[in-house]
Image (tube, rainbow, N blue to C red; front, side, top):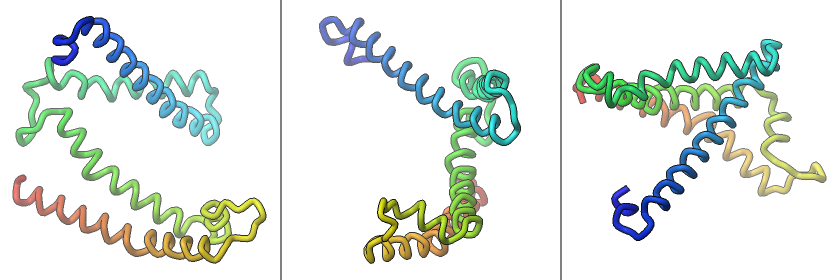
Length: 166
């Protein structure tokens, strides 16, 4: 905003920039919401319109608290953290790594090797090269050993940080 104040026509450039930023975020939000609606439609046999309304309403309700945490709810603090910081910490430090670990393990143990290999190696002729096979083996090794170790170490560091009060 300071840059836009200092340049000629900055008000219009700033308004255009933030309008484009808003539209990009709105478009990304619609794309993310479509994933949820599509899953509801496929797994729960919910009609698209009903799934979209329910999903949108739940997202708005979940977003109200963090959105108001810098003004109306700025006095709400837990261990010195506001509501937005708490949501950020929970999502980024705890939930995201846990979901990544579950997805890796689900891909590793919940899908047959043939299906994993066919999804990993896209070869129109159906004959993967030796390099693709070697890369696939490395990928499976990383899913089986590296990802769980890294996520468990990250969780251990988070727990140590909680214990120490950081």
